[in-house]
Length: 288
Ligand SMILES: [Zn+2]
Ligand SMILES: [Zn+2]
Image (cartoon, protein in one colour):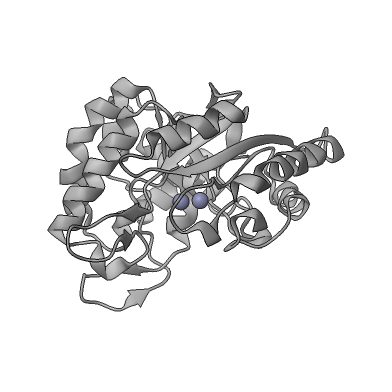
């Protein structure tokens, strides 16, 4: 199993040391784990690595790599934030640390006459002004050429109807394909709460993202896919990865990619799913 998005206590709002995450991932059946704590950024500084902690972070990953050699492949990554105007800041970080994998994510969106929107503020996600800015930022993220994959671009589905999301995302498909970046299939949408309508209460147990309707369009544009649990605690290591691959395979998903030294490696999904799963899958798809 490949898990290309994971957090440790270095992200501050996540729990578990690097070793604890690695042990839990081995137990969950993960064979290639990329640790991607939140990179230093001028916004929300208490919920991420500080620049002064990076040496320690990478040393910790290196120590785990040695300690668990032969049991799991551990890759070093970061989840970067993207906001317009932060490109130079991120470029500088990328130049200083050799990474295997760089995810670019939009978590914060500046608004004209109100406080910044955080993408987990679900009731605010359906506002037109917000959507204009979110998708403009996403376009900037994809165009800037700094990242290997766009992280949970469809997280807005926690608070937004899928047709609205698709209409906004479709103009970006060609740009994404041209960029060569991967689209991340982030399984935390299987665990997180969502709104059934913009005025409704938050509910749990509904699959919000990744978008199953966007998948065939991404495949048609030859966009590569990474996959990650986005775990914020060792108990969620690898959570949802096998489940998601089983559901998405009948929809045409054939390959999952991961990155080593910023180079993409494609793996046939049949190698990642145990034998005999395809039959079970088809049954699952027919039921849903
Ligand atoms: Zn994120
Ligand atoms: Zn994350």
